Length: 334
Image (tube, rainbow, N blue to C red; front, side, top):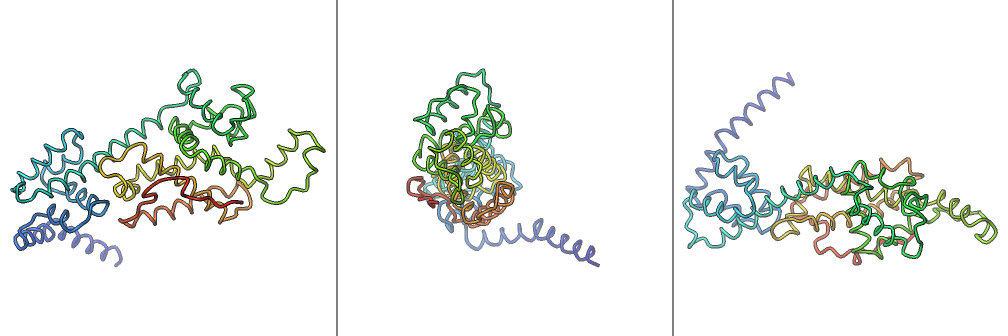
């Protein structure tokens, strides 16, 4: 019986989408004198509400020109808008704002597609220790986070001090490639104070240590014992994990809501990196609120955090960081 009801429901949904919806659009156009794209632009403010509806209208159109508009080159957007206006028999002289609105939304749509390709290219590029540019970026990351501590060697246990897992950070970049390094370096360079605070917080003992004072034992031993009792996560590894989360939001399309609301036209890699910085800080807050017993709970906390961000992005008016300034997003002090 359940299968029969499901089949009947699917049949009526098919009829609605195939015939009734198109018929309803025809009636509404005759009644209002406006096509669907006009109604969307005039009834929705600039941002995700408008652009998501325009994107859906173009994608499900039966007209080839409208469907192909989603994949045009940014340089061809203006001509594409002229072609759409001509196809819909809309006079640009009497509807000047429509052309501007359509162009802004279409630039957001094709810009998002291009951003996905740009980010994916960085993710797929492996870290190469023979590449001077890659090595320079890694050294810059160390200097930003450990300015007063010289690195004793390229292969060194010191990398653990900023949250890498072993002697050579390149092994930690395997999952996210250069994208992880780009994001970590952007965070360290553009909001150094916050990055240093997060790093410091991640190394602080969660409970008061019962070890003797530093002067009473070997310095290296004291530092290692405190690292063992730290709050529970490694800064660099968390950065790579949050890069993965931000990448997943982008590729799935969930990040459209945010980027369409903060990017006036084409979303850029800069806005992707700003979003990463914001999510790093929010995850830091969330980790402290969850108060996990140890690092073994990381995947649970990360999944819960991911679900919370997804819920927020379902609101078409949501902008995760509308005017990003990391220094304005005060962290919780431990």
